[in-house]
Every structure is written in structure tokens, then in C-alpha cells.
Length: 541
Image (cartoon, rainbow, N blue to C red; front, side, top):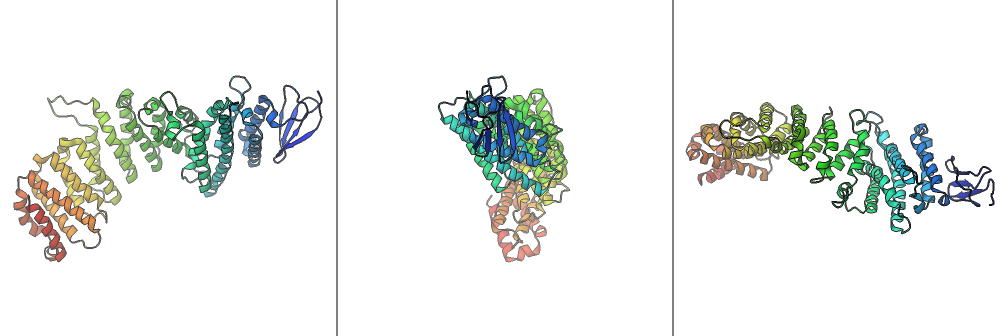
């Protein structure tokens, strides 16, 4: 067998010494100066190209690139840049059918090494820890992400070519190792976040589209849960990759981990989610328990998704529902309207699960429920609250609590009366969201607790008439459609109030209208018209 010692063959950026006296091959990247030595089992005849190497030789070369990305040398930016260039050149120079061949040894081979390289690339492009780096650091991360995304596109292109080829059945093994890390990278950078740029988002979106096409999935949900019942999907694999970044000590080291977790969680719904409950509930509780409001909201939304998509029996098992309730109940003491909105929506869907085990036997007073406890706290906060955003948030959710409790709302009737009257007196801005929701609450309250309304007739009638006059005297601030809606809702409340009091509203209205309605409203042309219109509607009872 002829050997040419020291012969140099150029392949793109590579220079290959065909053979040496000891039978080794030396492969160097001329552009980056990296030397990868791979000992072949049998010497090649003449010159050898990367596509002609044995699987063990390719594996060793990928392993050396992996070491450059993860070892001590990875701390040097120049070393990592060189490794990326060498990796790109090696992927381009290697045929797809050679790229996914294994060495035959357990837990080794090119597919496994490629999976580790993909993980390393994802960490290389990951955003910095929250307190490290500012806008400059974010721009650097976006540049890295765009570069890594192009590498993943080349790698997935090789997988797609191998998939369409009949002589490369090992592509599925390679894809199994690559799919998880590449998906995490794509979700990290395709969403609009501080560390992304339009270019990095575009490249990450292309990576995600190509990944779904190669895996044969029509959507992300199908990719995660499986396209059919027999297919498991990649959710478990991806949660396994995210787990090291979602524990108490490390979850803030990578700001993207919580967003990726939240995103993939939202993609998996009933009936697939219950089997992953042990994996998804602890990170959700951990994120919601943070001191930052943004993280609290993110965690509560994850918990809400779990509540909606996991059967009640699984949530009641091991007292999980009670744990969830106590974990998010304390957030109601935070004066953050977005957080309170997220918590109240979650609690309203959690109440039916918590109360499944509560049965009234009819031989005594009904026990106080979790809904009673939350409504009591909300009313406590509503009475002195002066911030408009919080007032709107509380008022927006109050009708749902009255519907949930039904006739049991009588337990809170005195405090509800004070809240309703005080909120109807305060102008709430052009949209009048708070007063509209309070009028809706009043209508529901009268429907559910009508026997107790007649003794509150005078107080409620004065509040409604005063509201009508306030709206009638407001010629500019509130849009006309909003005024009409307010007047219609107030008129509906008067009609219900008249029914609850057996027709007393018509008799009391004229007596209260004079002291309640100010002179400008009685005499002003616009106010007089509005009041007459409302009076005509109530007289038609």
C-alpha cells in the first residue's frame, strides 16, 4: 500500500495531511488554525477527504470541537469562534450518510456527539444572567444566536437530505439527539425578548420551521405531545434538558429557561398534560414564589394552565390543589393589578376543584368556602382602594365571585353594599369600566339575594339616581356610547330594584329625585333630556 508522507490536500478551509509515518491523519482548519488528529484503524491509500473518514475519526473530530466549546478553552472568545468555523466547515464537508453513523459502542457515536454539540451551541447563545451585562450584552447574545442558528439550519438540512435518501436509515437516531436542544434554542430566540433582535428572531423562526418539517409535525403541540396516541412526543426530553436550569439554585442563571418552560407548557393541553404533572408543577410554584412581580405573574399563569388542563382527581391527590391555593392566595396582598388579575382568574377556576369534596347535608349552615375567604379579602381591599388600575381589576372580577357564590353572597351583603355605593360615586375615566362592572355586580346581587334587597331600597335607589345624574351632567369627558351603556345598565338596575321591592321604586323615585338630583341636572337641557328618558323607561314597569 502506497503512502505519501506529508502530502497536503485542501478541502475548503481544511488542510488534510494524507498520512504520516505512524499511520495517523492530521486534519487542520487553515482558516482557524485548529488541529484535529484522528488515528485511523487502517491507513488510507493516497489522500483521504473528510467524507471518506471512518465513523470513529469523525467522532473524534466532533469531540474535539465539543471540547473547544465546553472546556476551559471555551472561556476565550477567539477559541469558540474558531470552533464554530471549524464545525461549520466540517458539517459542510461531511456527507449526510456519514454524519449519522455510529461507532457501534454503547452510548457513543456521532449522533450522540452531535446532540452534545447542539447543547453546547445552545448554551453558547443563551442570554446572560439577569444582573450581568446590559443592552450591550443583549446585542452580543443576538449576534451569537444568529450565527448558531445558521449552523443549526445546515445541520437540519443534512438531516432532511438523509431523510429523503434511501441509503441513510440512521437519520432518525441523529434527529432524536438533535431535536430537543435545537427546539429549546429556537424558542429561546424566536420570541421577542430583550436578548433577541429582528435578525436572530428570523433565523430562530427558520430553524423552528425546518425542525417541524424534518420531524414531520404539523405544529409545536404535535411536536411536544406527539402527533398521535402511539407517539410520545418530545415534551419529556425537553423537560429533561430544562430541568438543570429550573431548580431553586440555578433558575435565574438563564433568563430564557423560565420563558421556554412557560411556552412549552402552554402548548400541551388536556388530555396529555396530566402525565407530566410531577415535572411541571414544582417549576411553576418555584417561579411564582419569586420576589419579582414579572416572575410571579409568569408562574401564576403556568399554574392556571395546569389547573385548566389537569383532571381534578389528579390535583386533589396528595393535596396538590390546597398547595396551589395557598401558594397563590398570598399574592392578593401585593398591590400589583396585573398580578391580582392573574391570581383571581386562576382562583376562580380552582374553586370548583377545591369544593368537590365539600357536600352540604342540609342539616345546618353551609361551611365557609375558599371563595368566601377570597371575596372577603377582596372586599377588604376594595373599600379603601384609591388607585384606578386596582379598582378596575377588583371590579372586573367581582361579578364572577357573585355568580360563583349565588345565594351565599348574602354572607357578604353589607360589605358589598358599601363597596357598590362608593364605587358608583367615583368617575372611572372615559371607559367607565369599574362603574359598569359594579352595575353588573349589583344586577347579579339583586337576582340572587332579592329577599334581602327591599330593606336596602332607599340606599340603593339614591346611589343609582345619583349615578344617572352624574352621567347626564357629563357633556365631554365620557364618549357617547359609554354614557348610553351606563344609563342602560342603571335603568336595568332600577327595574330589578322595583321588582325586588314590589313596585316601591315608582313611588319613591319622585320623592328622592328632588334632593338627589342637583339643580343643573333638573334644569339643564341635556341633563333633563337624559333623566326624562330614564324616567320613561322605569315608568314602563
